[in-house]
Image 1 (tube, rainbow, N blue to C red):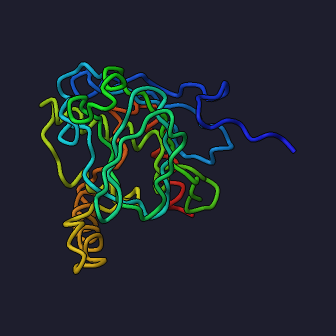
Image 2: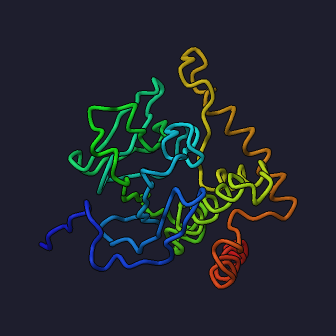
Length: 256
């Protein structure tokens, strides 16, 4: 029996697909890698938060920090390679700081979560690690079957490099003032990835309404955006070749 590879590191065959890309005023650097089959992943990202950048020191208020959300169909695994990363998880909104000593962590489907860079002054017990750039590996899994059960791992519904490149690139440009925020477009991207935003997570008496109502509102706005001709993958970020390839695949799926 073949030995399972060590998924806590970048494996030799996990070559770069694209990047690195400098986002959020050069405070966040990301590259997309080709995941090893053992990960059963639709995307593998190597991300770096620049520790000395003033925006990274904002922590949860940092522009790249996503709002609380959950994924219906895919889990996300991550490992800290250097420095530390913070997560908020669960309906109780529990904060935790992770370092390389914690190994691979997995946020399962339906688990409320968010990621954020850790400001050194908020966690002085590990301030030395806080002086380093935070480097993490993140992958989404499993690959989900396409509508024709052939295009496994393609967006939608799987979160792949085209999805993350589009949404992170677009949000970065709005953050930097290069583009005007289009809420409908963001809702379209999120909805196609089967991701639900969360409202009032600690109001337990609301029960499933905390994700169901935002999901329905998101779906309505996404439908309007799609009716307007918007797409959840953006050519200006992924490039003409990748966009045309994705568009042809989407057309083929609609015809089956």
